[in-house]
Length: 300
Image 1: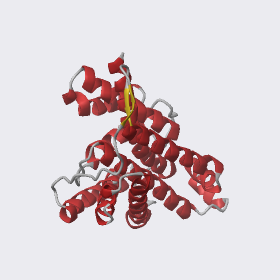
Image 2 (image 1 turned 60 degrees about the vertical axis):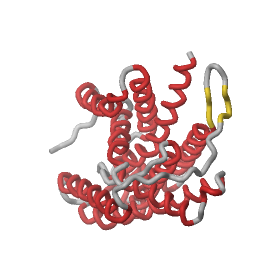
Image 3 (image 1 turned 120 degrees about the vertical axis):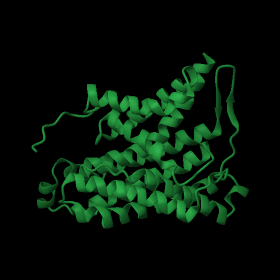
Image 4 (image 1 turned 180 degrees about the vertical axis):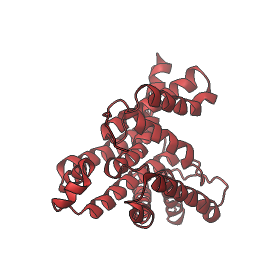
């Protein structure tokens, strides 16, 4: 019983991080019908931004909420700006181009960021600073709950709450949902499509920045290729939930985190990464629209 409860906590913690990254994929796809493969590398850049800010300001010497907040702000700002730059320079000029062209461009941007990261930051892994003390808050025979897991849960819930408010309670959210339904009609009705798309990239990229800091705290090692595998898993989580559906992305990410944790615990750690690709294959075969997605007919 103790093992199962502990694995549940660990799986939900990992799934929460996947959710923050998966939401970036699903938001951009919902608006532009575009899989932004560079999203995982934006996440990587956010991790390095928070790492260097932490080093410059010696945040590790004073761990706590203030230090963690500063690192989060640095990562979110860097990711948001990078997301806007990518949208403006790489995706907007190709908005009317065939989808294959945009897909190849997204892969190219991803590779550019990865190799630029190796050139600028170096290929060697770096130890992420400890910005919050990881101490047991609950230590019983059934479960051990540490402050780091609580921090991950609280920050994720706060980010999801803010995102929910933005999407469903603000003018931007209404505009984004209108564009997702029909971009041409939304433009005719006076919605500034370019502005909404830019904000969507900003918000999605900022969420990836939050996830990068949490990953740095939970697994304190960062390197320029850190976004490859976690980005693929977050993408699979978005597809599992139904790409374009934000609720589905969160549930898919939690299922991915729980599945991965229990596979490692009760089967083999070597199957950790194989699980994501097995799920993707299964989804595409049995339910291509995902758990919460809707089947649609596309003219070609």
